[in-house]
Structures are given as C-alpha cells and as structure tokens.
Amino acid sequence: MEEKMGARCFIAIDLSREAINSIKEIQKLLKKQSLFNGKFTEPENLHLTLKFLGEISDDKIKEVKKKLQEVSFEEFEAGLGEVGVFSKKFIKIIWIKLKGNGIFELQKQIDEKLMDLFPVEDRFMSHITISRVKTVGDKKALLDYVSKVKTENIKLKVDKFFLKKSELKPEGPVYEDLGAYLIKRKYS
Image (tube, rainbow, N blue to C red; front, side, top):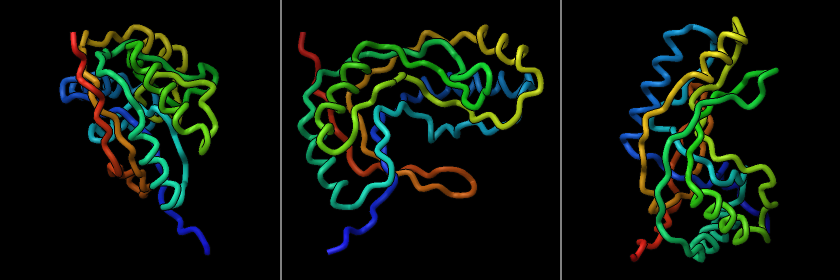
C-alpha cells in the first residue's frame, strides 16, 4: 500500500502579540534604512521553529502527533534578544534571537522523542526569521545597522508548542496548526 503524501511540517513556538508588535517595529526601522531588498516575514508567520520535519506522509504526521504528546515539560519564560544575520559573507536571513534556557531544553526533548523518525538537530539556534534578503546594497552599512538594533525587553510565557503545516504559495508560506501541545504549569 502506497503512503499518501501529507505535508511540509515543522514544530514551533508562537509569539505573544507584544513580541510580534515589537518585531514589527524593528522591521519598520530596517525598511526605512533601505539597505537591502527582500521580504519581511508577515506578522502572522512570525514564530520560533524548534524542529523542521520537511515533507512527511499522513501516517508519519500521526506518529509525530503521538510522540509529541509524550513531551513533559514545565512552562517557562523567554525574551527577545539581539538581532543578527547567519552569514556575514552572504546575507540571506535577518533574525532576532529568542532567549531562554527552556527553549533549548524543550527542543532537546522534542528531538529525543522524535529520534526514531528524524535525525537529531545538530545546530539548533533559537531564532525568529524577520526578513529574507535578496540583494544588499552596502553590506557593511547593513551589518553595522543590524548590530546596533536593540529589542525591547519583552518577556513571553511559553506554555505550549505546535505541530504546523506549511503550504508554499507564490505570495509566501501559509501555516496551519495540525496540533497544539500544552506545557505543564509551573508550580512553585
């Protein structure tokens, strides 16, 4: 029996309205500088990817959903960090770091639960893509500007994560939640 193609999937943390608004302000500042041509991530698509799964079948999606229910974690606080780029030589992505030890612990646990189905992430970096760069006019000016951008001290409570489907369309990706996984309340 042939496995039916499912969807392009990833596991992510959604951001608070306050964090999204802060990122939108940073995007506006970057736009104003006119230092590059590219596409800014739409507010509804801003998220932190914990694990990219790629194109997976419906059967594998069911397996992933089952395994993600086994993740046992306490809610934690995260915050917006510095703004940066992945490669100073070939700038393709501008990101904002999401800070918080819980992010790395949660990502590691998700990796462990899914290790029978997917390779373990060897270079996880807690980042939110805010822009995809096509061309850069003055690379040095862009790097200088990005290094000076300050984020507001915004904290967000991470109390759930999502299995998402990504449908690539000409106008950009459209995301749909396939599953939401609550993280236990912290008891003090």
